[in-house]
Length: 226
Image 1 (cartoon, rainbow, N blue to C red):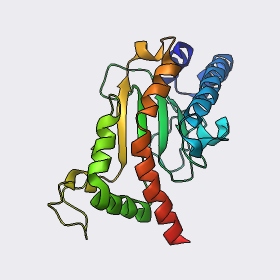
Image 2: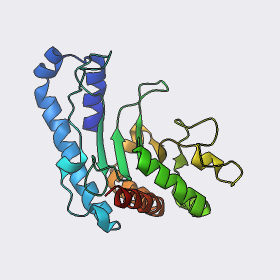
Image 3: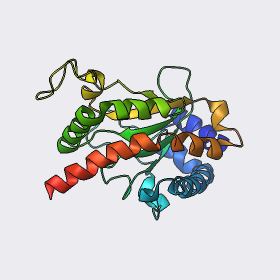
Image 4: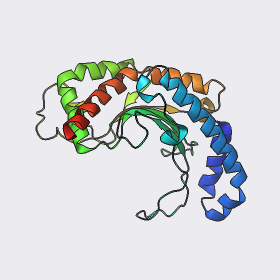
């Protein structure tokens, strides 16, 4: 993974089409490393979570080209590479396992990480998750605690409980989340180690119960929408 981080670090410093065109071969090598890792990651996760078996690399990875049409940032390329392994692929709206490769730039921004859960769920899905929390909040907290080295992200939370979910249940912190995921930061040295895949699979396996609880709520929401 060192080759991926080295390329992304240079891209962050030279995020323009001229530099990218001149270094297309370097990008292709980094892309190949990431593609091989993604294939092995999908296969490995499928070993303990049957719901993601049969996914392709394309189902779970992202183009490096940014959509700048509605953004004030006109940089043409993403300075990260990611793999999101979730039932039916990255766009299906299910909770899943996310591997993010991005060099640390010495600031609070950037850096590689592992994440498991739901990001920007649809309103009906988020409501279903909150109903699951009311019914099984302790089970969700236990699943978070069982996840090796992961912490609940509270970056996108309401200041008070959402409508129809009164305070005082003991799970207010969970109910206020707008994105429901746990994450674990990875250093550049950890990303470059020879056992990165094995450690990533071990870490993601520890989040399986958390993902299972979330996807039970997602499936219920989708069934209600049909």
